[in-house]
Image 1 (cartoon, rainbow, N blue to C red):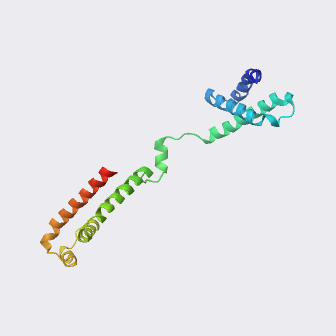
Image 2: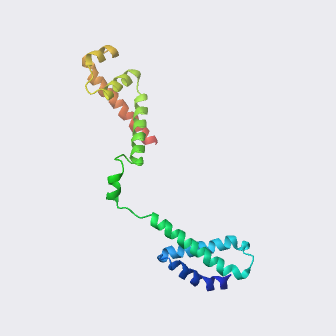
Image 3: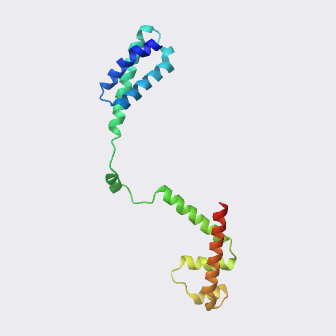
Length: 165
């Protein structure tokens, strides 16, 4: 086997380089050719056909690599970004989902009155304090201080979760 590798590797190298491949691509194709030979050598009935099999395999590998290389033409980021939709990255979305889940777990940890108040405050730009006062059965003047206490409880819950995570 050593003699075969010593004899045939330069031949395979020249066969693959004839396809215009650089050093690294040539090394990859030649290595793949030898790997294929090791895996399939028992299928070659005539020992005189080994060289032919290796050369044919190297040619096919070089041609296949050349086809794939033509298809994989690198594109500049600026060109690509102009064609891609403007969306958040998967990583950024995962971080936002995680933060949102943490926040709502913290909100769920406070009492029902705080949860109602915080939901209204979170989803309304300028909540109507009079109707909110009636719904929560608290004076209008207590809504602001109660909201501050509820937010403090949520901050504490977030901080505690951060320490345990």
